[in-house]
Image 1 (cartoon, rainbow, N blue to C red):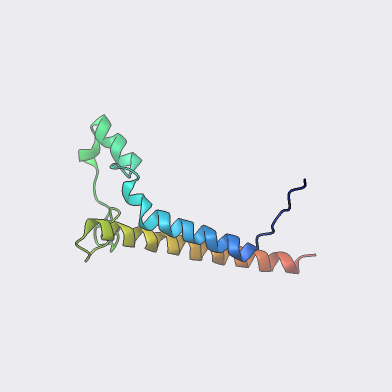
Image 2 (image 1 turned 30 degrees about the vertical axis):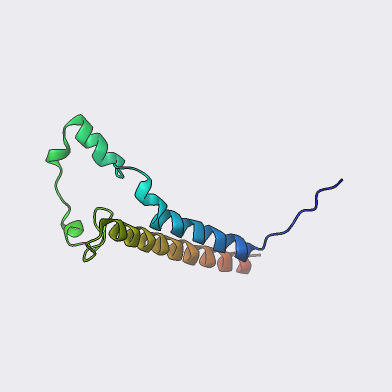
Length: 108
């Protein structure tokens, strides 16, 4: 009895990975941790969190502290920030992958 292997296309695999990333960023991340920033948690635990200063650029950022300005619902605000960040990272990574892939074709 031999097992028959099914080939999965690269496109289907990438699409599934993107879908999983978006679901994790948009929905599952809400349940991940009550302390999402490990560095802040350790600083609070060690007693020097009060000495931290807000960075000038993050104070006016539309998505600072894992939330989206202008959205009052904290769950939705976090989901929008997570999905936006994930899409941004995937677009940048995809662009880099395309550049590297095209550059590799020209070198022989």
